[in-house]
Image 1 (cartoon, rainbow, N blue to C red):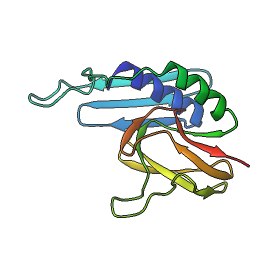
Image 2 (image 1 turned 90 degrees about the vertical axis):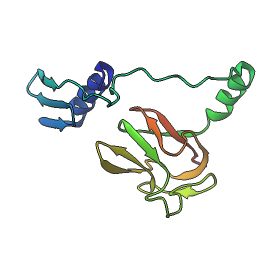
Image 3 (image 1 turned 120 degrees about the vertical axis):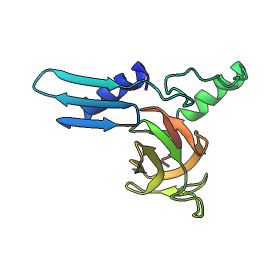
Length: 159
């Protein structure tokens, strides 16, 4: 677990209003306690086992194709849509299990409170509900992809 992930976890816990969160993984133990005005973080990290990849190891970035002209026109088109964003860090899944259909497809009508996807965080599957009513016009994340806090997931046409 790298420092950026720990910082994001601290921010998430502070926003959630929880007074204490403990996270224990194979080689890392983290306790975050929030109080009146201070946040206390304790991190214990054991040496990685031989043959096991380190969590903080850098990953190769996927090449990104440049499309400056298309990006400008897309921004103006997307301005009329409402974005459903990820409330947590985790792995994005479009369906509840591999043998089930997707929660939401392009063209699906969603209402406030409808489940649009699940995000796995720390071995827990969190159902993400729509905060708007409308039609899904674009899915912005690939299935089984990691997502960050506040990352756009879907574009919804509220009309």
